[in-house]
Image (cartoon, rainbow over all chains, first blue to last red; front, top):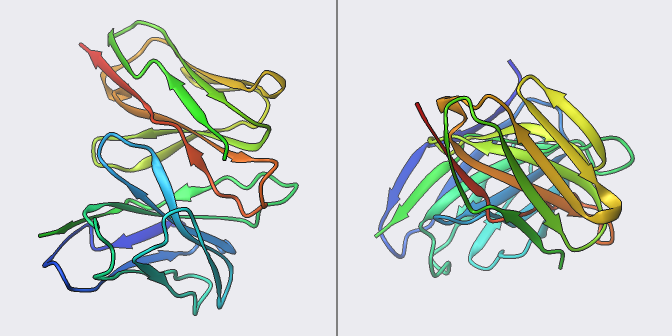
Length: 115
Length: 112
């Protein structure tokens, strides 16, 4: 059963704590992405990765960090430097952008609440 | 960067009605996807349609890339169609890493 899994579904943290969100895919996709969604808004790109051990900042990377040690996994750490971390976080994956259709598929998301 | 505008922002229908959702974008694209976000937040892929027309059951989509718009048609709507519909594009002029730029979404409510 191929797909993208994210855990946990809900996460609660105190201000000042770092927290790591998990994203795993078994679609054999090279590209992985992290997006953030705020209430009533579309999604915005935080980080992306096209290959193991390489990743790039998206539009709103400040206060976040990622790693890509395995092709299947792309964890996101929300650090205490992120000023407004409460949001819905979605992970996505696709084949590498190119001449073939590179449809992005999304995981179920993690709702993070920081108080 | 590329701008994506969706209309209408809200749409209320009776079950069985048809509807058309519109997505306008400000630059050329090499990827356009339509998604349905269900009440639990899951983004469900509806169409990958950078150009042309596709149909899947009661849903169909058309993208006219030269005129920079896409339309999503929902026929014989059902209550399970309720949710938020997003259009998202990849700017053909940007670096080709596949970043999707999302519109603000159309909130669809279908009443029984």
